[in-house]
Length: 278
Image 1: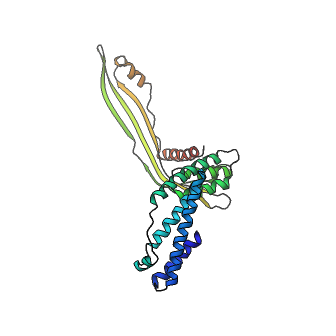
Image 2 (image 1 turned 90 degrees about the vertical axis):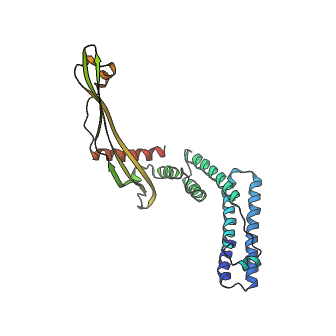
Image 3 (image 1 turned 30 degrees about the horizontal axis):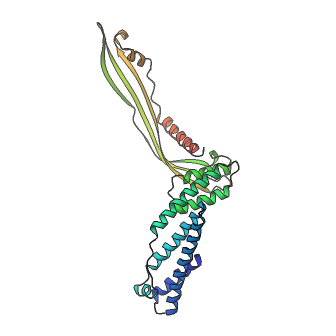
C-alpha cells in the first residue's frame, strides 16, 4: 500500500513536467488502480470477519484511497484523461470507519489501563492510533496522563506548572441595608457579601525525570474564588428576625491576599490533574 502510494507521488512529479511518456502514464494509472483495488479488497475482507478490532485498519485503508484520489486530482487534465482517472469520494465511509475505530480504541485503552498489570507499550501504541483517528478526542490527554503515571510510579514528580497570565479582582463588599421591626423596636440590618477571585492561565508540562524530555503539555485556565457573607445591625437585636439573628453569627473576615488566591488556583490545577488519572 505504501509502496504504491510512493510510486504515484514520484510519477506525479515526473508527469507534471513531462506528460509525453506513454509508459509512465500507463504505469501511473496501473499503480493507482491496483492500489485502490488492493485496499478495497482488504476492506471487504476485514468487514467480512465481523470483528470489532478491524476498524483502525479499515480507516487507514480509506485514508489511503482518499489520499491517492486527492493526489491524482492535481494532475494535468490530459494526464487524468489518459489514465482514465475518476475521483473517488469515500468521505462517508471514511467518517464511519473513523467513528467505529475511535469507539473501539477508547474501549480498548480503558480496558488495558484498568488491568492489574497493564501493557503500557501496547497502551501507548493504541494512543498513537487514536491520535491518527482523532487527535482532538477529549480523552486523549487523560489516557496519556494515566499511562505516564503508571509508567513512572506517579505523576507529581513529572508535573511542572507554568503560569502565562494571572488576573486578580479587587476586593468587593456588596452590601444591602434594610430595617426590621418587632413591636416598638427597630433595627437597621446590613447584609454584606465579600468576594474576590484570581484567575491563572498557562500550561502544565510533564517532563521525563530521567532525560528531561517533555512528555506532554496541557493548557489550563483555573479560578480561585473567595466568598463570605455576614450581617451587621444598628439597634437592638430584639428587633431582628430569626434569620437575621442566625446571620449575625457570621463574623467579618479579612480578604485573602493576591498571593494566597493564586497559590490556591495552582493547587486546583494539581487537583484537576490527579482527578484525570483516578
